[in-house]
Length: 87
Ligand SMILES: [Zn+2]
Image (cartoon, rainbow, N blue to C red):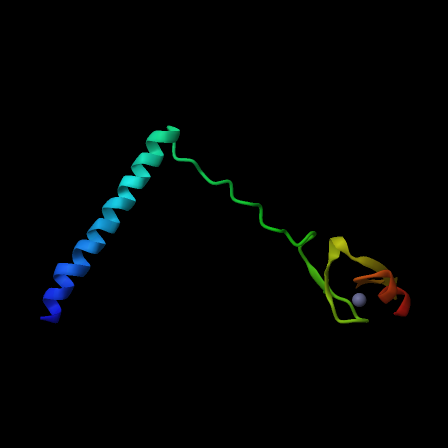
């Protein structure tokens, strides 16, 4: 009883879904000549890549977009001038 319900109801439904999907991709292919590739938005690159911890407020800042100060020969990265001045 339940099994026939699946076979008679779910199966045609899946079949219709598959066919309509196939049909839609065919139509889209015909319309534009070639399958249109959605331009993927460029991923927001963490400018400069590496993340450094601001020792004052604990925020992680990218090395390229942060303020730096040389302390004992080592570069220390800050999120803002405020933090740099506090250090
Ligand atoms: Zn900070």
